[in-house]
Length: 267
Image (tube, rainbow, N blue to C red; front, side, top):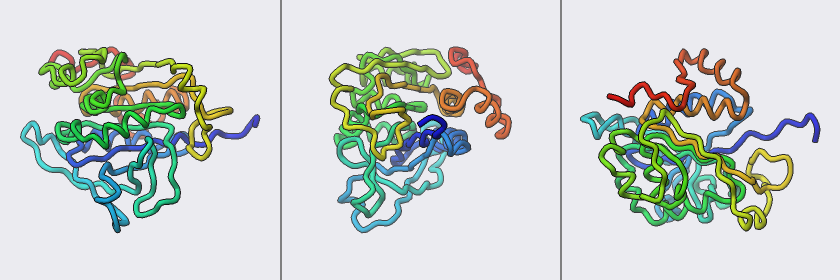
């Protein structure tokens, strides 16, 4: 309806043991500052059997453990991933929904979870006709690529990992960009993907009619703090660049607005 505000985009934030703290914290702060545009839902990746009887789950983070740092604080999840690229509240079978966006951070845990069949299947299924946005930070693109969801798509990742060739070895089918603050790729859907969409329903997908999205945006950022810059770019896409600049100013964040200019690319 004319004048009716679209519901906020529901973004499933995947938390696995060993996620990099700033990968989640910086975008979480940026995107969490605009609840009218985006709703962040923190989801654990363990199976329903492992979560049986639990009402909350605390997932440990990492603070540059791969560079001599330490284990970080735990973040609590309110939801879990379920079959078919969907999410559901912990310890409840009702309230299952299809997120309109997914967010995959990086971190030490990527090296373990890139081999988890259930998570990789969920990541493949999460790229469904209702998905509007896929966002990764640092080596989160490596994890997403392991599922095959990035095949044929331009994407970047952590520069040290790219220099060592780890994402490329994991999935050479991805068009890896070696130097960028973040990369945005607008991908056309195959006709059969949009024709079979069941509709947005309660997913929170921003749509003016019907659930199928003709295109999906992939936003992949390079190492750690670049996720904050990419999150501001997402905010600009959803609410306009002035809104993003206002949030950056409120956070006292120096936003690198040029996605192709990475000040750390030669270090």
